[in-house]
Image (cartoon, rainbow, N blue to C red; front, side, top):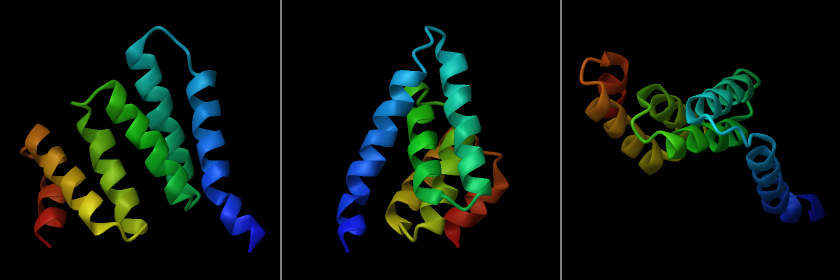
Length: 107
């Protein structure tokens, strides 16, 4: 039970370490690094970590539709339906022809 109480601290430390380790001045490089890291975590079913990385990418570029879509997918895996719906809506707003996101938003 002690481990579960330290989980938020571990995620916070991981986020800080991730932010500090990617101090590139090129925002496009930074957002791609976060996105690729998110993909890596997602493929390993580490959805919380993936969500953090995708969220970091969207903070750098709020118009990064693919990062919003992947963040929504991570939220769905985490059963955070409200967050997923918001991210799917943002994805469709940015990419009206993104049919998988539009269908997921409605279903």
